[in-house]
Image (cartoon, rainbow, N blue to C red; front, side):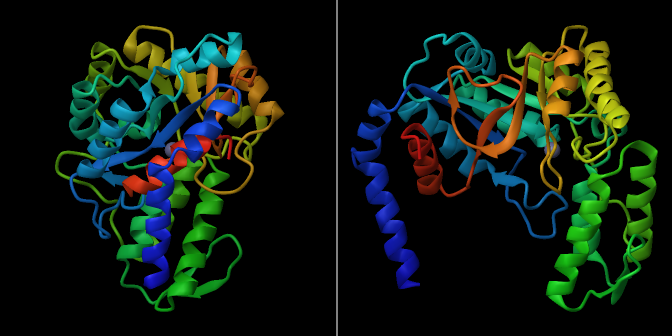
Length: 333
Ligand SMILES: [Zn+2]
């Protein structure tokens, strides 16, 4: 307890000091891309999207900090910086969201607009089209909510005791690993099979967890960027080339159809397994006509970086840790 208190004090002191600011002046210019998923009023453990959520209050604190201490920029500005060395103000930060949760529109959008922060939203097309949760959330929920004592992994035949927390955790991880290698209807059948075996219904909220197409169009009307996040959220580096191509190309095409404009940005899903991209998938995104692609790999963006493999940084809820992450990124740490 004491150790964690003094650690927090140290972090706070570091955020307030000029050491990291000085270090960032000595390193070459860079930008940061933040990765969010969901913003909920109060994230709950029983919630199917728990684990991907930031609370509304914490998100507002993050945005307030960005507006005051950093320089919010659009993804296009970061792209031009990476590609052509376009000048960016020190502390340039772009905000991104993966998956297409309805709370992005309902809770995050008003905050972004209030602080004048441009953001990019990467849409998992099938989830939005069908109004169903991304499969990785369905699995997490099923393993959390089940009353069954056992689960037999249909892939390796191993039986897990679900009353033993560690076994439950490993069982979920293996189910995630399997889902990450599947796409489309085969993936659907696998996820449905797990839910059936665990005796849980696919989680649903009365208002739906995903944005409607009208809401996606609303993001564009408000001046934000919309990009693609595949059709069925596999790990595209772990599926066949033709499946990866179809996920990368078709999600772009379907979004273009729905929005009536070119979709130029892609975000790599990373539900499980490593790596989540390869030189081959990079070529696929190039062939498809994307101008940028973002990863889950942590790090800053520098002039000259490959625009189809841009690093991002994650967004811890705690404001001190969040600010420290950004300052460290700009200090090249
Ligand atoms: Zn995702």
